Amino acid sequence: MKSPMKRELRLRTQRGVGIVEILVAVLVLSIGLLGLAGLQMRTLRNNQSALERGVAVMETHAIADAMRADRSAAVATPSAYNIGIDDDAPSGGATFAEEVLEGWRENLVNMLGDEATGSVNCESALCTIVIRWNDSRGSGDAATLEQLTLTTEVQL
Image 1: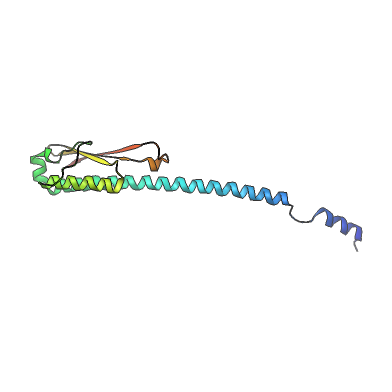
Image 2: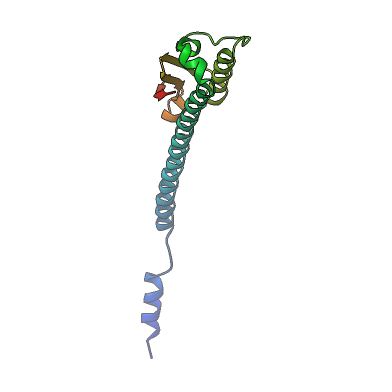
């Protein structure tokens, strides 16, 4: 049998988890959760940027497909689809090319934001399509205007 003195001594030395150990564990857990929240925010920003890049690629294909649908006119009069990056989109749509360019520019603004714009420069059957938009949300600095540009060359 154990003596009562040894039993009492053992109870005094080990009485469970102390408040300091609990506070340290909570501190370590809090720092880990803050890091996880920061990682989640960064992931959301990168996903938004990737989505916008995907939309820009799809809009590039949209205007190229529209020009291919009107290939004979686009090759015969390449300047019909030409529009500068800072030019205003044609309004009213008197021709198929003007309607397509007007709708394309509207889609860019609707899908990529108010700063989004695009240009088309055709020479013969080779066209260069440029889309520019603001990616400040993707970079995480909404105060800074960060322009991304996607350039694609297509053969009609």
